[in-house]
Image (tube, rainbow, N blue to C red; front, side, top):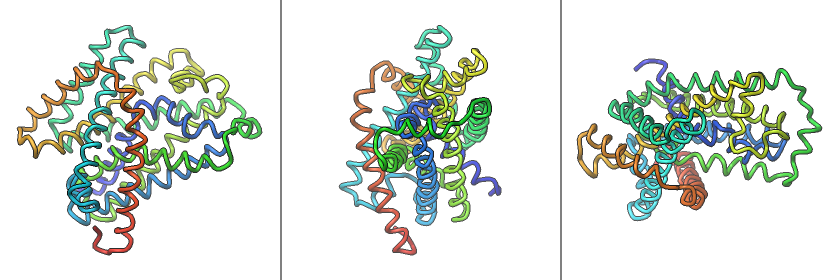
Amino acid sequence: MKNNSYIKIASIYVGTIIGAGFASGQEIMNFFGKFGVNGLIGIIIATALFCLIGSIILVTAHTNGIASYNELLEKIFGKRISKIIDFLIILFLIAGYCIMLAGSGAIFEEQYNINANIGILFMAVATFITFIFSVKGLSAVNTVIVPFLLISIVYIGANVILHEDICINTLKQINTTGNYKFIISSVTYVGYNMIPALVILTSVGSLVDSKKTAIKGGVLGGLFLGILALFILMPSLILYNDISTLELPMLNISSYSDSRGKYLYSIILWFAMFTTAIGNGFGIITRVKPIFNLEQKKLCFLFCLLSIFLAKFGFSNLIMVLYPVFGYISFLIIICAFLKFVFKRNAI
């Protein structure tokens, strides 16, 4: 086992979380930006939780030889309740994957005037190629793309920060929604994102050779997420009056010094969708493979083909209802896992 396996784990962790909502700046603005300076504290809280929870999931899975999220669910909740949660998670993953395909279509059409169906098909083919290589494909893609995303977003954010004055008094005026709500928002944000992380982190057991590797992977992934969030939030606060009402704030921020920047960022956004799509899709394929007992390539092909058609339908209403529910479920799982992790040495 190579010593850098924790870097691969961290990259997969980040790649699964940093989807369209994160990379576009929309989620960061909704959960942190509206709180002004307190939003920066919220980022610190969220980063700590990402580090802690990611490490707990990885260590728990490694210690108990858990190879999929449904095994973890059964150990925590028993077979009956875990089946209900399992079904909801499957819906979440399918919806998430299809939304990423639809997002790819939107980028092709809106940014490059290419038919949306081509964008959907392109994403489906790219994810299919990744899926057939299983964990190795997932690791290879994220190890290459996540550093690119990290460097690009830090560069764009730093460009605004270095060229604009940061006025703390102005940032304080942004906070009009209560003194401590930013804490609740931070915790909710982490819960909202931990379902796909739970799924993928329990599926990469072949990369985890020790508790030390598990902890380092979880902590490094959490820190990377915190850095990305910070370099999206800071320029968003500085340019708050210009971008606070936009659906894709980072597209506007990326054009800060060069109008062509939005085209570069649309590529960054596509890659962010891609890493999230392969995370969600891999989670689904890993889960249903034992049920259908199909060859890996056939299962991947059928899943991607079906998703192309599903991507043409609107999932937004479904997601508006399911995402908060998934956030609560995720935290319930994490709290139970944490308690057993602390009070029982040999874990669950």
